[in-house]
Length: 481
View 1 (cartoon, rainbow, N blue to C red):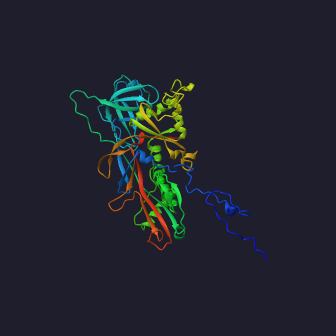
View 2: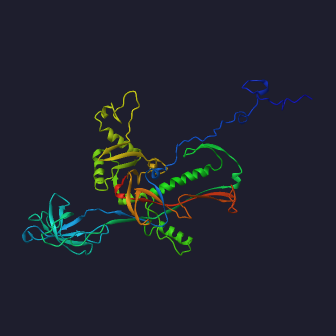
């Protein structure tokens, strides 16, 4: 019998890449010899995937120990009414006598803030006609309106009967030897409130999968570099929860009466508490909701200085905050760059741009960080508005930017019982001496070191209870389509 040629002698690997008889394979399968090259490190195809950071940049976080957060904001110092009707017709018997004006109250007002002896200017809302006069008497409020009698300084009333006017107080005048001002005015505060919402998330992995070790080298969004085992998904759950803590404060809306969300969340609360107590409301007032309802709204994107001037004129009528930051999406950012570049007389020829000192040996700067026109405006890209998995890919309900006043404002804190300086945007989270719900995380189950239940898994739980307070919403601008 002859010696079998197979299996033959064992091949001997060479210490170097060298072709020898002992390492030459004549019959092989692809998967045996050519193993695929693998990368231990994940490729970051989407870069930094988190979108949070907006509230950390412009606001602060502080504790609250109540289900309801209330604060008071200052009202206007001076008195003006925009819905004034000129009752008495000019000329005839009305000349040189008291002219009557009916003022319709609005915005929840229930009292008349005008007094006998005050001097007022009355101006037609349409047209250029106006009068000045001194108030002779003020009637009682009935059905949301009251009537005043005014003695005009002019010989006759300029407006015809029924013309809608505006009226503001500019001083007072009394005859010699008369009594002082009748009555007094109380400060007109605006009271606002918001409620925190509870956010939760969870990551779970069973005990069997934990026994199969797998390592992946990653660089996390917070800058940490290293190897992660099965907890990579836990790490991404935590990052996702961090983003939701911010986006919930931006997007939250209160549940309307009769809505499904109100019924569902109230029923769940009552069931969890045995029906004894429970919330009868749901949702919260996020930044977009507040600014859209109590702030200023610009439809679309301002692309010219004339359009920006209308924004500036509105800010003049509000708090006139000196410095403002505009958080923009990419379209809005380019629109501001193009608008400012057009102000350079050489911009059309392409000889200068940006800071207007570009030369042929430097990279052309085609962007602007900010500008001053009446106020200081700083531009900042907002990743949330560009991210295609969030607002960056919307057509309906699209938001192009948000103007946020910089600095802080003074408000009366109902809980503290005193005035306090607060950032225009800040987050209040539930906390007490024994319970801090700013950012809770805990592990349950029977795997991964946990010994809390008979569940053959490890569950990582996340919880937070918080609300955002938008102070002075009249100083904010929302740019939306």
